[in-house]
Image (cartoon, rainbow, N blue to C red; front, side, top):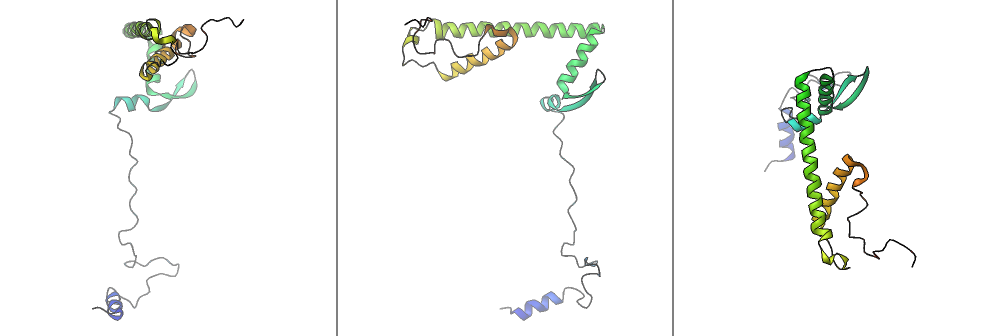
Length: 178
């Protein structure tokens, strides 16, 4: 069993104990630092993987547009550049954007058709809708609300966001005369 004296002897035998371990300014002398490897080196800041298209397109960048410095994501900056190039007469860019506009139009048409399909299935054709205990499934409600929000963005107030049709339980007539 080691005694405290043995432990002190081992500690003293580690180095030159005659020499003070600190200099006149209080810094450690060479060879006496309690952290011999020193301060850990700073690691380079880890940037997001730029090969990921989603991360790359959503990274914010500073650009100069119309003589003013603006901050926007790379996707928006690229679209602005494409529009600018198309408006200056670059035919390949005009064709590309035309195809994009057509695809967007097709997707909106499909969304409108799907919205109408959901409304017909769950609101118009559902005889239980007037029953106060009837509850439309939450997934369907969320899907209708999502489609409404998207369609309302593109078609103004044609798709009001104030609720799901047929879920206001109360009197069905609009006049409040009695």
